[in-house]
Amino acid sequence: MSAFRTFWWVLVVVLGILTCQVEAQAPAGAAGRPGTTQAAAAGTAPLVNLQMGGGTERQNVSSAIQILFVMTMLTLAPSLIMLGTSFTRIVIVLGFIRSAIGTQGAPTNQIIIGISLFLTFFIMEPVWTQVDRDALQPYLAEQIGSKEALDKAAAPLKTFMLRQTRGTEVDFFLGLAGMGPTPLQEVPLRVVLPAFVVSELRTAFQMGFLIFVPFMVIDFLVSSTLMSMGMMMMPPVVVSLPFKLLLFVLVDGWHLVIRSLVQSFGA
Image (tube, rainbow, N blue to C red):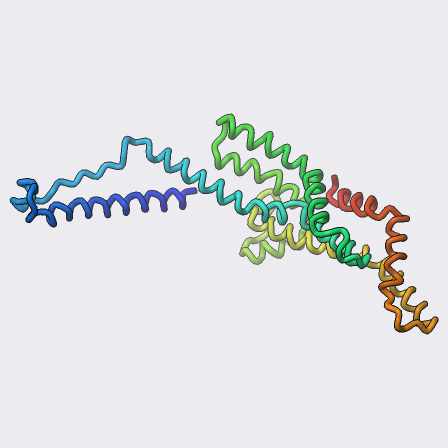
């Protein structure tokens, strides 16, 4: 915030100086034209009065900076939703399910993203409720300032990410940041966020491997059976796909996967 405020005031001062220079040069260029003032004809220097307003501009500038900050955060909102919540793990695991079964077009990308968003809202609801209670509502009621509201809003989100992040990932990024051993409560958000993303990718790929195993067994059995029958020209995928779908339906695969995903976050 201080950097934005400094930039704004420097810009205002520079514009004021340029305006004063233009006003100072205008009478000098108009000295030879009719209607010039006696002071300009006599060669006297014009008086310059630089006034920055009635004293309320600082508050107006602060409001403009806050609006700029909010608009910037809105542009970053999709990235925060994808990388700072449970969305990453869910969408990767659902994508692995589609690849393991072999149905590249079903479910579609829109359906997978929609399911991931709804599950994200369900899992993150306690965190967002705490943010609304501790940060948003007091700020709207003008009980706390913007900086305090941001700190209180980041606290539950950081707690959620640390609960899902491996300690080795946190230590790794603390070392990259040049920081020594730090208590979890004092780890900055710039370290927690990348550590959380890497940890989520690792967890999602581990779950994807476990999902692939039973379907790989079906592919292996179908391929071996076709080769033993001398049907080497028959694509194994064509034969194994119905068996994969049958297995997934019999074990109620969607229920098992979604329940495992929700429970993996401790929800």
